[in-house]
Amino acid sequence: MLMNRRTFSTALLAGAAASLISTRGMAAISAPVKARNVVLVHGLFADGSCWSEVIARLQAAGLNATAVQNPLTTLPEAVASAQRVLDRQDGPTVFVGHSFSGMIVTEAGVHPKVSALVYVAARAPDAGEDYTALAKTYPTPPASAGIVFDGDEGRLSEEAFLRDFAGDLPEAKARVLYAVQEPFHKALLTGKTANAAWRSKPSFYAVSTEDRTINPDLERFMAKRMGARTIEVKASHLALISHPEEITRLILEAAGQG
Image 1 (tube, rainbow, N blue to C red):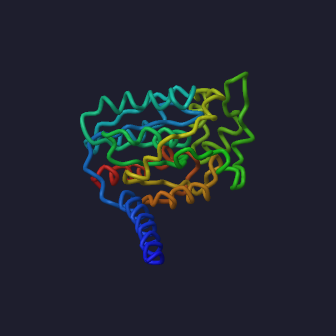
Image 2 (image 1 turned 120 degrees about the vertical axis):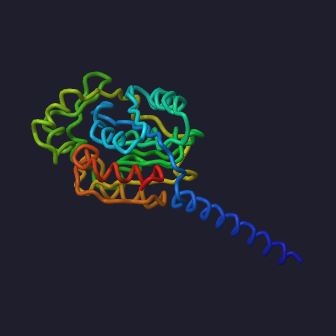
Image 3 (image 1 turned 90 degrees about the vertical axis):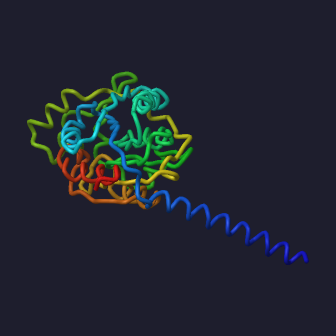
């Protein structure tokens, strides 16, 4: 009888684990709800205007697109800024993050109006995970050496911005983007997510194969771990600017319009 109970308990645990894995997989690959709203969040060294090329295409496709102005101060404040924009949406919404803002998408993506998540060369931590420790398990990308600090504010040097952040953009355009980069606060980098929205929402990921800001193999690892529908774009970290057609198509797919 003891053996039967033990066997039964083991079967229950195995079944529960299989159910958890299955549920996560279904969330990742199931067809997303049709949405007409898209909320986009920028990462470090940028502002909301970095989404302009994508926004124009989403609007032409009939979608309502809004770019969040990420304050780049602390993770809770950045999440709150995105949540306020999500609150204003009138129905199912695709939530899109580039670079650091993958942290925001992962945390705030549990919002009830979010129907799907899109990561563009973005961080995608698990709940409570130390992203910095995870990133250190991969070779350090060149852009990291180009971060300079003025007290508590960090930014990319012009050389690193042009070469390692926006390497596939025309130099004149990259210089304009460099001129408007928003410094980030050191405190922003210490935040950890309490949620992992990708465990319960359909997820999509665009890997930048020429990325010198986040290691492309780390991007592939995070995309595979979340079971995301994944594309690879031969682009720098700024695929949303250098390859807006591919990024827009992925967002439209996440909106059930692909």
